[in-house]
Image (cartoon, rainbow, N blue to C red; front, side):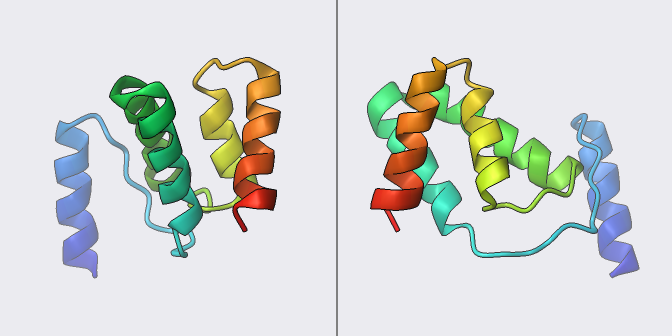
Amino acid sequence: MKMYTTLMSAYGASAGINYKFGGTVANTLQAHRIIQYFQEEKGPEVADKLVNSLYRQYFEEEKHPSSEFTLLEACKGLFLHSSFCLTFEYIVFVRGS
């Protein structure tokens, strides 16, 4: 594992990514559902911003990859109107469950 973390840290550093390896490994179905939603409704540029936020939160900040907090932070990071985020929260966490 030490070789892996050393190698990945070097790869990440060359790309401006400061990998951390202490986060939770968990099911990412909800994250993928959100990405798909934004891809279909808002287009690839918005979906790409969302993915970058999710990756940063997971790989650099060690946040849970599918927690409600992480997913909503990524959504809010898209600078969408707050009512959209609340509607989206309902779609994903209530209706989509």
